[in-house]
Image 1: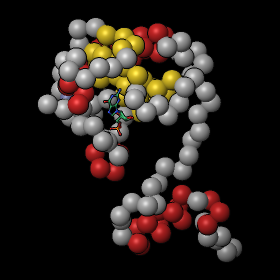
Image 2: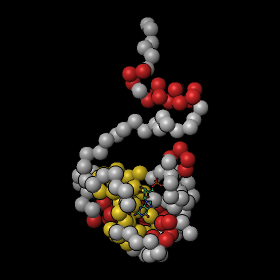
Image 3: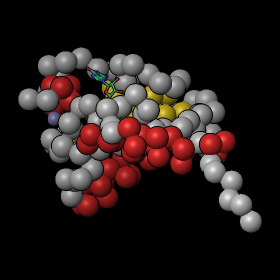
Image 4: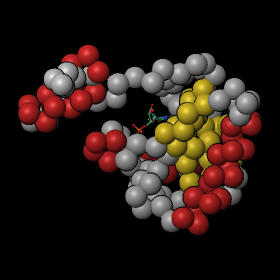
Length: 138
Ligand code: 5GP
Ligand code: ZN
């Protein structure tokens, strides 16, 4: 059973923010912002790749309710779901990170320490950094 299924089953404790029959919102154990809440379906779904649209329909409303409960719906927030290897998904149970409570940075997201071949890495770094972009001669 995955770690988030254990949280749903109360086998692992969590700080619950909001809950209903189908969804659970709880505090991330390693917060990256003043508000960092994880929102999951109680049913085990591996990632956004596998989720049925009918679950997302209900989950959308639940996420909106969580933003209100956390009082960040007016100040703004970021909603992130990591998927698979390149997405950096560590827990293989669909979850949305709800981040807010402060002005959030929008960092360069390419992980240059990742084990990708050098040519791809150099290309990615160059494309991502406006200072290294080659000037086109006219
Ligand atoms: P991912 O990298 O899969 O998108 O995010 C997994 C998130 O789950 C991370 O932000 C991590 O801090 C959080 N997390 C991992 N284990 C636990 C746990 O046992 N309890 C809680 N509350 N959060 C966890
Ligand atoms: Zn699970």
